[in-house]
Image (cartoon, rainbow, N blue to C red; front, top):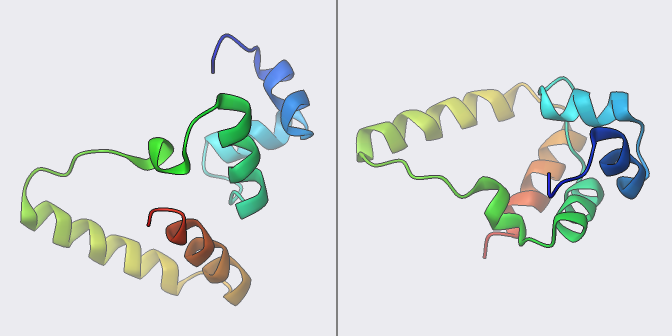
Length: 90
């Protein structure tokens, strides 16, 4: 994290270290605002946080099915947050 301790990173995000840990471990869903703050603190574009290679098209299809299944289980508010995040990849 750019040389920050978790406590310093949380402070810069105006979050508690517990909240940062919950986001890192997937126990909390990151909001669009927090995602933007993370990118600002780390000085990266949102895409950089999610840019990973899926080499084979069948793996891509499998990932899309997993994403779709997961999104269906989210609340309307969480689905909107996912949509807001996805819009940053234009």
